[in-house]
Image (cartoon, rainbow, N blue to C red; front, side):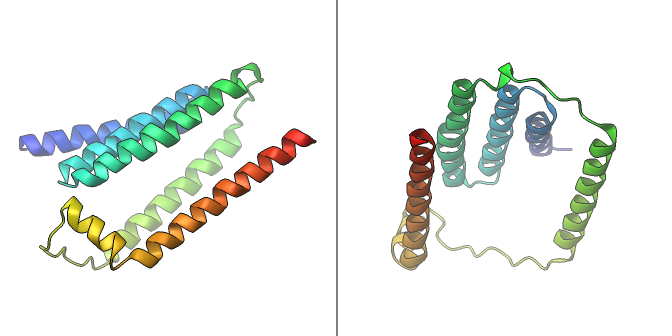
Length: 164
């Protein structure tokens, strides 16, 4: 086993532990911290795969913006003041069986898929920017419009709750 293999296994284990903590812990604040740990692991995997741009985007957008917004929402809503419900073993076992079946199906799908080889073209940040604002300008703008509509919808919903 090489050093690269050991580093990859450590990063993958960190990502899986973070994901496990994000869904298993009963405290919502700790769930969000587990999500952040898992997202850091994904960013580290991107660095390991020489995709530094995606790693930086992962850290800035998902960890720096979305996860911090989730933490602020948790701290402002005070969910720890609510009563914790007991987890029923029957529901837990059904959820675990469903998750295992979904994982097995996805794993089988991934193994049967013929994945195309990556071209050895220019994969720099400058090339990504040129393709986003050149070849893929229309889908890029469509995504920005969808995000704008989502923000406006969130503002309308929040203002409707405040007025009532």
